[in-house]
Length: 232
Image (cartoon, one colour):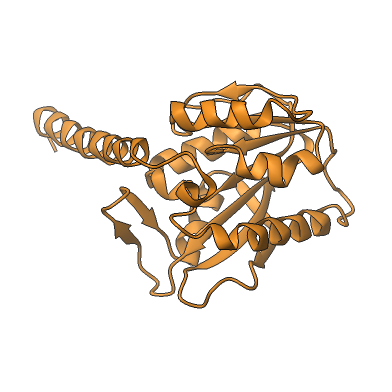
């Protein structure tokens, strides 16, 4: 491929990726900053989700080389549903990362009466770089479908640098049963099959130390799995 052709190809790829992110941002701008909005009208599963996450976190702390319990990150935090409903019960400091400003403002408002301590980062995960060596747990849920494969790998590589010794990243995501990537043009996101998620984790230089399926979700939803991962 000559340089002129390559340049044109790269520009085309960049343009498609930009549209992928812009379309998602436009979609979420129209979504109300409520639990129902965050869960696509499925607020009824929120409690089941949070309890499943707590059980998984409990199992992580039964490992020999378990993380500390001082500071966590909520990646793709929305209005702080996971921070308030789960992470704050386990960590005295929880930072939130969310690219949609009106979600983050709602999160600040709802967390203000609580004992929340932590920072708010108004930025997409594809651009977020954590401070080095500060997090015991980085919890990233239902947001990786908004990252391209390349940006997901880059994000996970940056997350590695944000971990304390023995720190872990937890990914909680929908998975397809078809074995294929499925595109949702409504919110400009993808749902990946299990094999691809595992492959991307490995490409980022991380390994899975524990994996678990979320139980008690309605059968017509995607399978949801939690992956506890750490640097190789």
